[in-house]
Length: 443
Image (cartoon, rainbow, N blue to C red; front, side, top):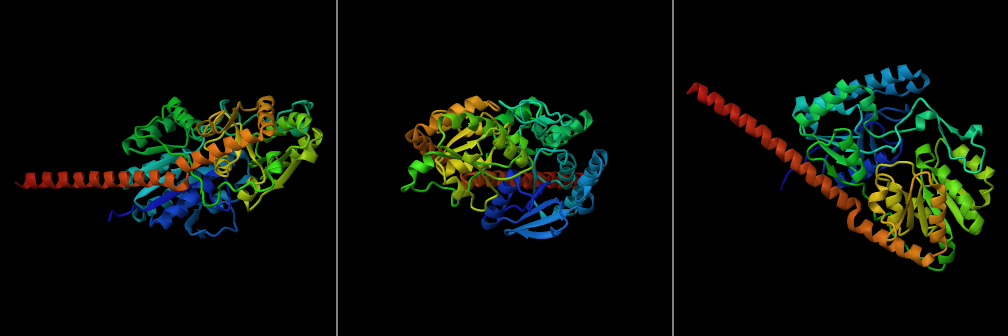
């Protein structure tokens, strides 16, 4: 029986901080542990109440650099950067000390942290995988300028439309590139030297890395996976009429998620479908502005801000139509989960979404920030329940075929086995060559 490699997962944020990367990492680690893999997650210690050594739903977690990371938000931007840089050093030293306890290092996000950790793998002679999680938006990041919510018919100078510039996020490579060409070039050379494998979640992300000269040999597309034991279609029974008039959006209330665009689209929808209802599940930093926008657009009677919910599948099953209006994504878990539940989904043409939705077959795609096009897509499905059901069935079938957590993990484990086997063979060859050289010299 082939020995299963021990995996160390390095990720900047982890539970109790929850996002798409954290959710997917936890789900994958749980399944890998059940399959007999030894997994350890090493992350930064962001919150005092979280223990240094923890067990999150069966996954061992080690949190580091709490004194540097925990309260850095109260300091000026320059001090925050210095503290984060020092925290990266602490994580790098930690992983170096733990090098004998793992066979492969997996880094979640192609960030500046990749550079020191690739050096660790170079010295420790360990294989490395990097999961790139975001291709960013089509526009360059401008973290020094505040972003603004879509105004639509509202006064564009309304103060609460302004969003904190820190929510404007670019792709994975932004932090690396901001450190300068020397850092970028050194990282590229090191990754090629250790034959690191980059895992991208979508075809757009692969193009993004190639456009930035990080199209490393062996780059592979492995999307996120869905736990279909939780997310699956249910019979409509007697509430089809109500479901057909309900649209569900599961999303964090952050600028990049485009919920303001959705509210502007819903303002148009309400004029033609006043009995339709929109349910927004989730919370986040722009929640107050979104609620103000709903009030200003006079759509509060038809919009439910459901907040955080433990039973996300139950919320999805309230409707027949799902929507994700993101400005940019990596591979959105929320969209995959809605499709797995058999919802007819509308999404923006961004990374990940454009890979899973085929317009006119299993859903509809619209351009980011095009609230008028989004409104038309919503009306198309609201006015044709049979079409929505057809899209929903096709969406669920696609998830079962290609996007289950089991299917995705089989690709990861195949890669893990291949990389660790190659490294063991490579080291054995080097040892054998050295022995032969010594024998030859003695002869």
